[in-house]
Length: 341
Ligand code: SAM
Ligand code: SF4
Ligand code: SF4
Image 1: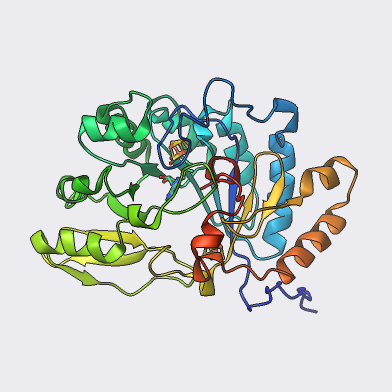
Image 2: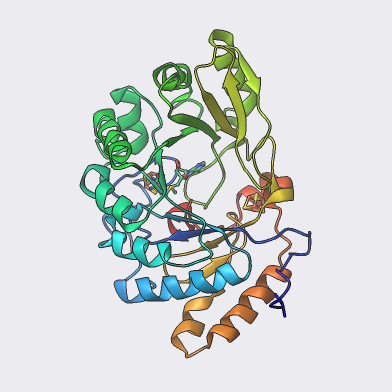
């Protein structure tokens, strides 16, 4: 007799759960101006104490339960995921979970030369590397940690050499800071097989002082690039894909645009986020989460946890980017470095 599979949950807008992003630490070795501004994340900032972080065993247990509800893609992020010790150990635990079909990690890249081979051997599929400019003066202003471009390029090369390619590159564009780097970045990476994705500056958290007039829109970014290199739109490969894809008309590869401010994509959003201390968030712009750690540490069974997750997903109604306004921008939202980008 065929095995009877329980129905996978859908939220109140009919969206399935497919993608889980896990923040493994709220700490970072950068202080990007749009994410962890130094004035807020200074020497006295209280990061999560170690005892509050989910252990690797707890994370793996949660991921296995999430796969029973439809999760296929898992991305490790943070903060900077590579500052958490022994990350390859976590990767190998997650790679061994049957339902995990796509296992990736987003990083600022500087620790990749040390860790890329171990990550690959542990079973990581690919990495996404963030890089906001290809000239040192602009990049140092953006990361505010004195890191030159060459260190990130070395990280990208180490990842490729370890077999973690093709690499996607994330560039957040903040007006007045790095929009002049859009075209040089396109020039540098076209034809290399690395896929550059431009991200509109978002009002995540409440410490970056976000203003709408500091967003360089997807249309402006596309116009800047296509004035020198004509672009053609490409069809999306799967539903829930956040990047709009374009190919260079001359065959030199593709770019992506993540237009979360000017063209919101909540209608297909199938992502959940697990913070480093075990809070579950059903939207990047949430003001509060669901405490899974207390359940985990309080003796809940796998069945209890699965039922809780199902209930949370089935009650989900989030569509922040579609209803963004001057008022919502100032809500006390959780920080990106905590919830996981
Ligand atoms: N530290 C890693 C990194 O930078 O790649 C992973 C975490 S970071 C929060 C994940 C992604 O979020 C990065 O590509 C980063 O540029 C992006 N990000 C952070 N703050 C953002 C903001 N305010 N608007 C748009 N993207 C942002
Ligand atoms: Fe750190 Fe990434 Fe945030 Fe930059 S974007 S401060 S590298 S977590
Ligand atoms: Fe998903 Fe929330 Fe972003 Fe909309 S605003 S796409 S619901 S994370």
